[in-house]
Amino acid sequence: MSSSGYLRYVALGDSHTEGVGDGDDVRGLRGWADRLAEQVARHNPGLLYANLAVRGRKAGQVRAEQLAPALAMRPDLATVVAGVNDVLRPSCDLDEVVGHVEAMFAALTAQGATVATLMFPDVGRITPLSRPIGHRVLALNARIREAADRHGVVVAETAAHAAATDPRLWSADRLHAGPLGHARIAAAVAQALGLPGSDDKWTLPLPAGTDISVWRAVGAELRWAGTFLGPWAGRRLRGRSSGDGRQAKRPVLLPVAASAGDTSPAV
Image 1 (cartoon, rainbow, N blue to C red):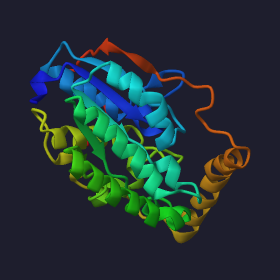
Image 2 (image 1 turned 90 degrees about the vertical axis):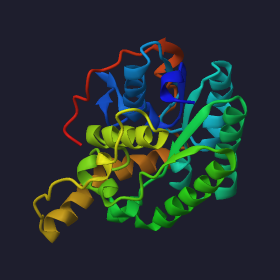
Image 3 (image 1 turned 120 degrees about the vertical axis):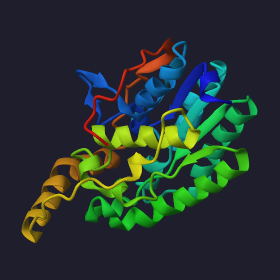
């Protein structure tokens, strides 16, 4: 289906699709899925859009909580991004995780929707303390790509370019994209879908930054561990999630106001 034919877009996923890192809970979250919806709406002002994503959700929870409502909306465009919250846990079973993701691919494409997903960057290149799980992220990418191929799902290869791990694209927690990162993800998915006006500028590296000393880099790692890694690990030990008690920010299909252009920093 051409982009001009998209009438209903539904986004399924976790914090990345919810838009964490792009705005806040006071002013509201935007995120790459909202940005993508805005781009689609530029060519179809009648687009309706729902975002069912909730932070902290693992792939099985996304399937259990979001798939049935998504199917009931009968989208002709859907995005499914899940699995990172699973691979962050030592007990991750990739067969189970990808099984949930593939079930969502199968159900949505069987109903006639165009489905898109994206690849996750190597988190070990964003923060050295995450290197032990880097191989699991890359394995997840490979398995999701295979599942996407089986169901004709569009894949945005967002992990294939060096710019994807530039710290300036990431928020302070290094787990979520910042506004510039969300803008680039939206641009990548738009290109993968072949939306009018999309191109590959999102792959370009940012201008060279200022090198920092080894000691400053170590200090930054320690501050990050204390500010973000410690609280995250504490929630895991208590069996809690950042998404406990939270609902989807946009649980029903609503019209999208097409933006005249992206107000984020240049990508």
